[in-house]
Length: 224
Image (cartoon, rainbow, N blue to C red; front, side, top):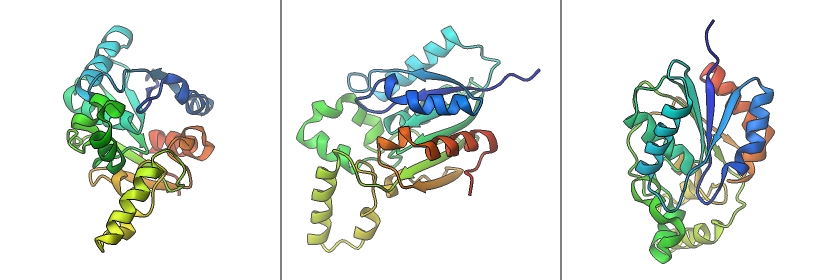
């Protein structure tokens, strides 16, 4: 009998596994076997956290059982690093939620003003230099366009700078989830991309996000 995939949920910056519980419960209601993985998002860099995920799997997971991966924000970048450097695992499908795949303008401002706030998570991750997505990985990307969140302070400042410079890319930078621009979530190698009316943190407690995440993990596309 074929084993059901195990779905690993990975939180974002300055978060703990608790924030993933609402999503985990909704995915479990869809029949998914979930595990919430926690890590030190500020103190340790992406390579260390990716390595620790691998070590955790070596100690707690049967390698014959496929795994799906769901990451919020920085957690999605850890997924990208992990699937690149640990190809021995059977990866089913991956979904990222509000992940700045090409780097984060918000994180860049914070890094320059108060680097301790983002810590090691900026290097090789939020700076946009994370490893390219391997060709065999099916990745679904969910972005939010409801601008609620602490990151608005930096994003509003960035918008004013673009207007002063008469930057033609301004329109591309108007839509965000309160922390991450929709443009930053786009990745050419991704299988599918979906924009939903949710904020950066609010997406984790949103039933539609959970439904679409489960749908992609099952079918490899988002439901439309």
